Amino acid sequence: MMKSSSTLVNKNTIDTIAIGGFDGMHIAHQELFKNLGKNGAIVCIETGYANLTPKSYRQEYTNYPIYYYILENIKKLEGIEFVKLLKEEFTSLKKIVIGFDFCFGKNRKYCIDELKKIFDGEVVVISEIKFDNYPIHSRHIREFIKDGNIQKANKFLGKEYKIYGVAIKGQGLGKSDFVPTINLRIDDFLLPKDGVYITKTYIDNIEYNSVTFIGNRKTTDNSFAIETHILNKDIHFENINISIKFIEKIRDNKKFNDFIELKNQILEDINYAKKYFY
Ligand SMILES: Cc1cc2nc3c(=O)[nH]c(=O)nc-3n(C[C@H](O)[C@H](O)[C@H](O)COP(=O)(O)O)c2cc1C
Ligand SMILES: Nc1ncnc2c1ncn2[C@@H]1O[C@H](COP(=O)(O)OP(=O)(O)O)[C@@H](O)[C@H]1O
Image (cartoon, rainbow, N blue to C red; front, side):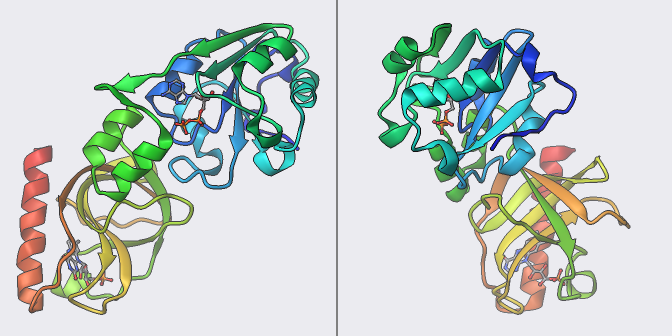
């Protein structure tokens, strides 16, 4: 039932765990982790809809080992059964760190008070963390990203929003008629609103300044594309695994009357991004 992302840590030494979904590994999640001490671990409840840091991508944002429970497998457990499961998994467990709104088990009927009654160790409860008086939650961050409000999403995340994908073949028009681009296929990650963004692109762990287009190529073949143009470099790469960090939205997607108008706009986008970087 449980999958460990860390093979280096002996589970029996873990004395403190933080529990939650932790999609995004945002600022509030990091506040919980500050209470984990030197033998801590993170227990992720996988809901199946995590799309800010899906699957094991959460590990990039913490040095603590992460263990996963599939929600489907544990959601029917009574409180006592869930705590028993945790104690069996982590035989030295003494402390559980949760947020103010943590509930678990059958019909989510067990919350902080019940956990304190059932668990014979310490329960540390973190009160609601806010940014500029606005509560920080993954669902709010998803809305910011869907609105293209990347700067706000990044503030809540405490880092730049990053997605992973693979390079795929494009129309072959970029190089000849516009600017060269890497076309991407992205699975699992939430995509920002259609438009053009200032981004950083990572290939083989090398960071490149870039601009990224997301949307239907209304001016050419109308098909959906995610395309990145690397600034100031003609790159050749073998690795098809690519990641992109979003910094700021430049503009919405648009249909142009002809290729020349689109090319001029792309050159303007590039200049705008260059002003940010250089
Ligand atoms: C910075 C940038 C901005 C773009 N903006 C638009 C746009 O507003 N409307 C559009 O139809 N296509 C836009 N595109 C996509 C171009 O249509 C696309 O790069 C071109 O069709 C080449 O596609 P290919 O790489 O598959 O050959 C943009 C591309 C880049 C790199
Ligand atoms: N803004 C917050 N302040 C304090 N604790 C939080 C906050 N957001 C989440 N938590 C706690 O972090 C853990 C993971 O919560 P989760 O539900 O995955 O986060 P989110 O609410 O962002 O979706 C839970 O124990 C939860 O109570």
